[in-house]
Length: 490
Image 1 (cartoon, rainbow, N blue to C red):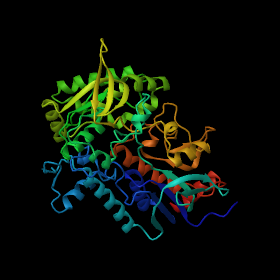
Image 2 (cartoon, one colour; image 1 turned 45 degrees about the vertical axis):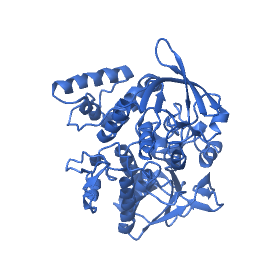
Image 3 (cartoon, rainbow, N blue to C red; image 1 turned 135 degrees about the horizontal axis):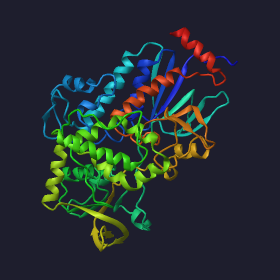
């Protein structure tokens, strides 16, 4: 039997919310000597795309009470807010943070919280656990002869580890499926709504077309408004659906019984509608019934056959998401005002063509509906806010390409992310799960469906930290040996 390494080495790739919170949980729970390498190409950790926005208009889409980094301490974020000088006021309108935690604070403030969570966990960590932050971009990963992994950075530097965890977050949307390479190559087309310099360069009087009508579109509109944009804005999606608005909810017992799970999408929707009627009869809003289902999303998805999952994605997904992922009330009020005064128009239809013109881009759209009328409009800029790309077969990131080409990972059948086990272990081309390579966060969505919001992500990170901290380091070590060591240590 090969000698057991003296220290567990864990590499975390990506230091946005998921990577940073995973590192914090590992610092808290590792009982054996452990070194953690947190690899991030950006100059700062903890913020990622979601919380690095420079706009004060961008607020969380989840109330403050549900945003603690620790599932066993739900008021941690609230206490952090109240402890900050002047932080009892937050958000674009300076609303007080009530004891209930029903408030929607700025994303920048939340990014600062995650940075503090990581700093505090590092400061409080026992001597046998260490954290090293590596500012670099991981571009390749291979398994080595000892059963561990070796990462290569863009600079050429290599890093050896016993296990690696992909916490790479979200990827930019793919271009729309129309043949317009000259448009996509021009500065008229903004490929990602998180390209702040490109947004800032838009002519304030130019008409703008935004592809997508979800929460990403909402953030994009607020960014344009905050920088003084005066031109008309059209937001286009196939169904033209806007996210619903958050309201305070009350406890409600949903229809789910863990021993009797629905096996079709229709069963789920029928039962949910019945719950909404029950909630209404009890004087509650539909949101109380909808939110009561949230703890069971993973369980329901697990019990749906593959074809039922496909049916959900094909037919019900857009309607589900506008009810599930809602706007903060103050954000919704701004969007409603823009629609009312004609500055913002929400349109349903399919983009049929894009053509460069001397004045901008001519967009051709076929409207949704029985007549399917076609309309055209010349705009100064087009912003792609259709949501993140989840099909890893279309993602060009070098590390993703390396994992796929080496057969260490594969896209899941529904193209929701990477194929992983419920523990986050990557499943390779041969269908076997790895005991050294893991993925957490949005890329690990396939077994769960919901894995994008903080309440799900923090629990995943806490569970993964415990799992990683107890994995045997020697791949030749028998399970009985591991079990015996666990009994001795306990």
